Image 1 (tube, rainbow, N blue to C red):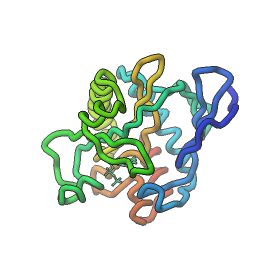
Image 2: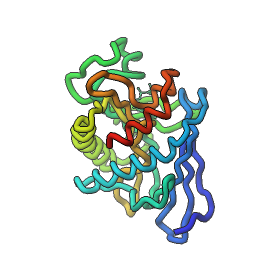
Image 3: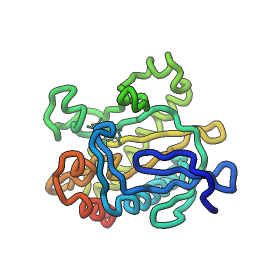
Image 4: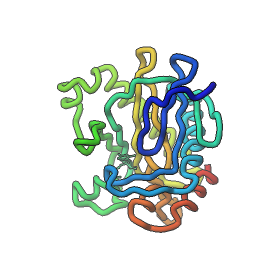
Length: 232
Ligand code: UDP
């Protein structure tokens, strides 16, 4: 497979057409942004970590029955994926209070949630990805009812698979963000699963092992990304 025309360049990835109509190549960059693009920087070798980690987790999820866009790793920074039309939704799953939830509800980071929380945001940079509920999603047609129920079911099952997987490797999955796309009329998992999109805390010490080290200038950013990949 070869990279042809670049279709899209996002904050952390580039997407290319290939000679096959419904296959794209995703190339992971070292660029890092936070707070809707206000903070910018680079994290050396992040692209390699996020590419390899996403590949490993997509493979695991496929084995457990979740359809994903992942086809195969092509190089350190590139993977071949199924072409999808991305649903304009960020699906956030929370096991422990952190980040914007702590702020919104005035809770301590690390507080236990009595149940898993699933949130949706409308993927729209200009609006700052506002939170929406299922009525909003259906009222403005961000997805169909069927797609929405499938997204919910997959997101919760992914959480059930990933929590024990990370815990066996000394990491607590605090919260994470997923994106889904439509391929051949079906909902499949797309985008990435990486320290950019998950909060992971060391199971023994609660050390933050994710993008919060960059967002909050906690230091050891590169080393932490490498450590997460090594543990997997
Ligand atoms: N997240 C993400 N992209 C976004 C917003 C959030 O990957 O545009 C992830 C984030 O890394 C965390 C989870 O979703 O694992 C929940 O994020 P939160 O709503 O707390 O927002 P944050 O405080 O990270 O902006």
